[in-house]
Image 1: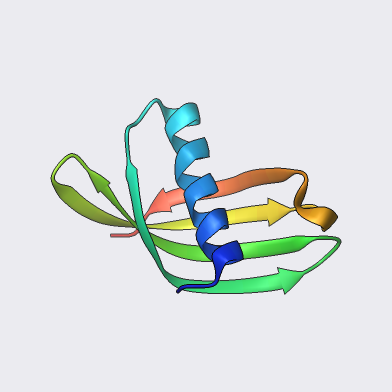
Image 2: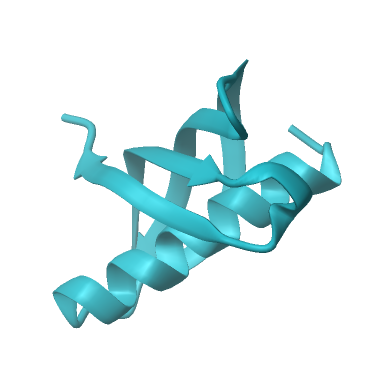
Length: 80
């Protein structure tokens, strides 16, 4: 996905997960994304990220308040 807002939400999700879980994942790309407008935007993203030399896929949910000034990561889990 190349939409700049979606890519930004994906990078935010990886950065926030790294802070919370003390990991060092590196964002690669958003491979799938859905959004829902509800007093802001809820993104449900499938993200590819590397952990060292290993590439993994994750499901992340990000909520962005209207105006984009505030974001929160509501879930982040590895897809098996």
